[in-house]
Image (cartoon, rainbow, N blue to C red):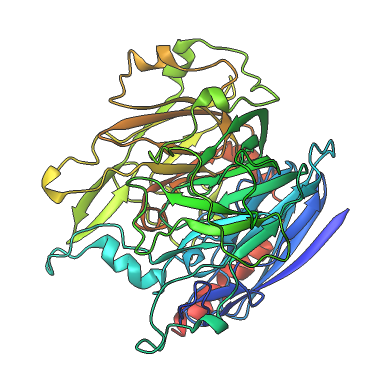
Length: 536
Ligand code: C2O
């Protein structure tokens, strides 16, 4: 079946948390954008038109493999030019995985301003639940445009401002939050009657509900929990796993979990039958001014409007870390056919995250030089061009064994302790693939020793994993080099990605040219962008 959607990116004053954000940007008028859904195997076309006056735009379908559809990955500077004001770009791709995820602008810092939405691909229906909810986007939120906040991150040596992550203002759950302010003294502060009601859902005792969680934040990782209820986790990102039960789940930026919640509270149902849904910011992974975690309500009595009096049922661990690998066991194991450490050593690319001061500003990088993409000349239009020397790309083609290992370390982040950098974990995201997590640890990586400890025994598989960084750490991932194209690897903290904490992987570029049906729409988009740039 062919599914067709239209998305318009526009400027809009929005106030999801009850406080005006004048430079908001939205999809089809709303934040989050509309649900895009399809069935496993469907063809999807999304026509994206950019009406934002001051920015280009692109949309990335986070986690979708884009197998042989590299040109639909939506990364400006890599797979296309930004869509200029008034122009439309058609994304054509296949739903090759099932589960829930999100889509978001990949134009610079546009998604934190509101250009993000839920994406759901229905899979085989062996439903072990009674009711499935649409995806829930959990996000930190700022009242200023992310483009303004970014200056804080870059820092400015002359003004003495140091490169620290900007402080976000509040948390929003599916575009609803409650920023506390005084409307009588602050006219950007909406009075209670003009605010959206708190996110709430009804539970019927004994039924099972499927919750699809997404962390669509700019800089924050969360711990998600529902007072007095257990979560049965059934997928990590787009990968089904053997279910495990937990009271809370850690979600890094870009990560998703599908969890089944049985309407069976561990403590007796209170008189009002209401329980808090909590989103707690992880330690050192996000700075939020008003980080009240009581973000949603589960009601056993549909008519009740009272706020819950429930209290947290457990002592939460708020450490910023991924779930332990032994919990995240894929149902379909990674088809690794060789486990020799030698292979790993021979085929490993290494990258080290660092943050340095250049020209008075702080820049993050993965490869010793921050990745700066040329928006007007995307890499995809230069594939096969032997004189093209894309910046800081890893070129891997003709991989006999077919697997690529990438080790990312964070040993040098605090090269200069006087800068006082916060050793935050970095949510590392790879486009075009799921990857297996072979190692994920604090401490220093040893080329000779660490690969011997790699986990080849059905390791977790997903598309975002946290790189520990306190005080140093490493993340070793593996993926099959089977998808021709140019793919980004980057930290999903928006500030870091925008300041260069990214690199391109050129995968089997000699195989790609015949597989791209036509790059004409890409070229046309580039002409439109250049024309727009010239007049601005
Ligand atoms: Cu969620 Cu490069 O993106």
